[in-house]
Amino acid sequence: MDRKQLLWQMSAEQFAAFDVLLYLDTHPNDRNALQMYDKYLRNHMRYQREYENMAGPLTSDAAAHGSWRWVDDPWPWEREAN
Image 1 (cartoon, helix red, strand yellow):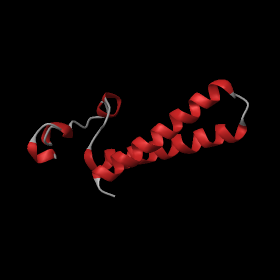
Image 2 (cartoon, rainbow, N blue to C red):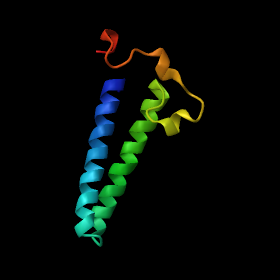
Image 3 (cartoon, rainbow, N blue to C red):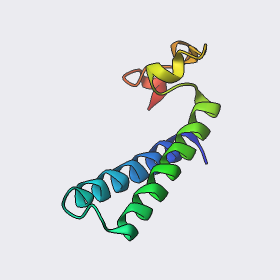
Image 4 (tube, rainbow, N blue to C red):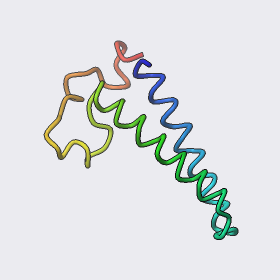
């Protein structure tokens, strides 16, 4: 997958995890929903790791581990990024 696909997939998994989390607010004992939440969260984290290995950190927490590569890439508003 390229960077754009990874970002899209990571966002989709994060959205799904959050959606299930909202459901769990009113159904905290639903074991199937808990398993779904765990699955979506694991997938999100896997895609995030894959993205960060390819393109550098997405969050300040990840950047604290010594990688500041985003300053070498075009910023989102620069023509080369789009």
